[in-house]
Length: 115
View 1: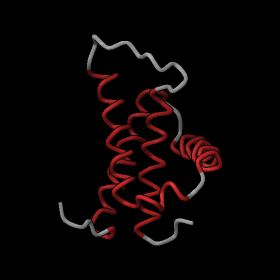
View 2: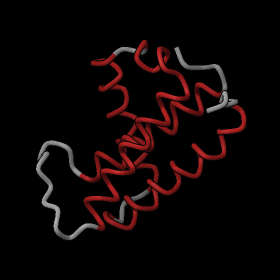
View 3: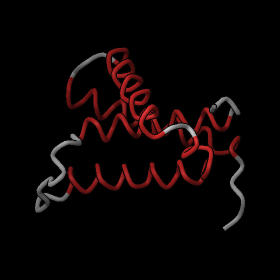
């Protein structure tokens, strides 16, 4: 696998973030502003718990892996009718907010503003 240029991947993060926003809107019929505020607060809380080094340690590749995991979870739980959600303390909405946050972190890494 070759090296990923952070600049080339920015449109991907934007598309993933917009798709997650659309899915939350379709589910909850709330405003984008309230979703982004809630997502921001969740991201700040999780960043407090994890710290910033976990993002910096693996960079864009780490973001892509985490996004892939979250997207797979959402897809599996929403398309596979034979699957019962076992992790009760992370809702599908939380998963979508994590997708929004990881896409945002990816954009921040691409712009060299992650601290």
